[in-house]
Image (cartoon, rainbow, N blue to C red; front, side, top):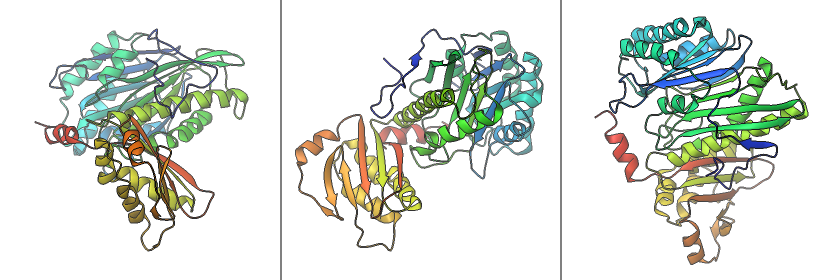
Amino acid sequence: MSFFNSRWVQLPDGCTELSDGRLPGGFRAAGVAAGVKQSGERDVALLVCDEPQVTSAARFSRSGAQSAPVLLTRQQSQLGALRAVVVNSGNANAATGERGMLDAAAMRAAAGEAAGIPVERIAVASTGVIGVPLPIDAITTAISSAARRLRDDGAEDFAAAIRTTDAFPKQVALQVELSGGSVRLSVQAKGAGMISPNFATLLVFVQTDARIDAAEVDLLLAVCTKRSFDRISVDGQLSTSDTIVMQASGASGVGIEPESADERLFGEALDAALRQVALLVARDGEGARRVGRVIVRGGDQRGVERVAHAVADSPLVKTALYGGDANWGRVIQAVGAALPGTAPLDVGIVIEGIEVCAHGAYVEHDAQALAQAVMGPEIEYEITLPGEGAETERYFSDLGHEYITINADYTT
């Protein structure tokens, strides 16, 4: 089945999905088990770029309780390009104080020694349970093991080792045709719960063998992150650990110049890949059955953003989505809560192309057709506010029984 399996995101022209398991030129990766996860599954991952002239960019959680790896890597990413990424899953190394900072530094040092890369060019990421110290000795031993297993077709092992409660993998490899030749683009990600715009319980790693200068890598990542991971919600909870790293090795020899046609083509490929990954994160939503998309138009930008956020995070909207319940009253309730003091609000609501509300009031519609429409895997809500010119969207999961089961037993 194609990675691009949503009606909301299409594979751009000039792009081909790749299934050979190889990373872009210049990259090698591995994933091993250190025993952090009780399941015994892979939980330590290492990705290395062999090209010293690699360029990179990164984005991090906006939480006020950022994990030790985020604090460490955020500082390093401002000093120069990142050549390697070392990750553990099963433990977030968050709220762990000075010990957590020392452990994050120890992971970085172990990766640097094993891979022969200066520590200041290594990103560290951790995901999992908050407030528990890392089993650092087991992790550093596993990092050395991972370094010995680095392969240019190690993306799948790497992707498996960064996951926690994910029900399925979130990775893709593309070939993008540019004027100077073809380049590869690959993405590995994890995320299923503690997801909210700005952005999520996300670890996302992007690699390309295109030659792109650092400023353009940063610009491309910023624009595409805002259109993808900044627009998803599972449970409205902001993580301590979000980390997104993009690296461009230049190994293909194909350069991408700023404001060129090639930059547009590559940007479209990156945007599509990250939007589809973001959709998969929402769809994975720890027990989710369905994913919703809410589009809000009209008013001013601040107003449409508030409404989209309120609808996507509403437990009433999300539980109705889970149950396939066409209760649009829950949608208008969320809209009104986002815009207090505006009554009577001239709002319109369309669900799966069926108009149910206009000017803030019920519209006669085919209730049976609507009930059938909201039973599908993807449900679209369109909301119109007074005014024109502003528009935004959010992707969100439903909220059901399995979410409670997973999170009630998360540490036990």
